[in-house]
Length: 130
Image (tube, rainbow, N blue to C red):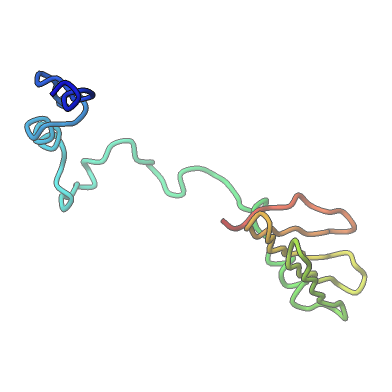
């Protein structure tokens, strides 16, 4: 009999301190809103008084229209593709190589990066996905 009882828990133990009991879950849920509730616009606090909330620009994040137009009109430039073990790369450049647009699907890091050269100077690579 002692062998059968060895390793068994005492009859006085419980798991209540490890789990929520129904009354605790009900109490917590009673303090929450239903998923289909609504708020009046006037009842929302902390919202900006104007939209767009502050002056800003995205020029550092995206290519300008002028840059894209220049790439679309390659002026005798070229597009080249490189597919190696690390990445699939696309280079688009003007004939004078003053503007180069570079996309990279990096197979090792599983990201898409973009970069550009303006007047011979490389920009900072930007990860655009994910």
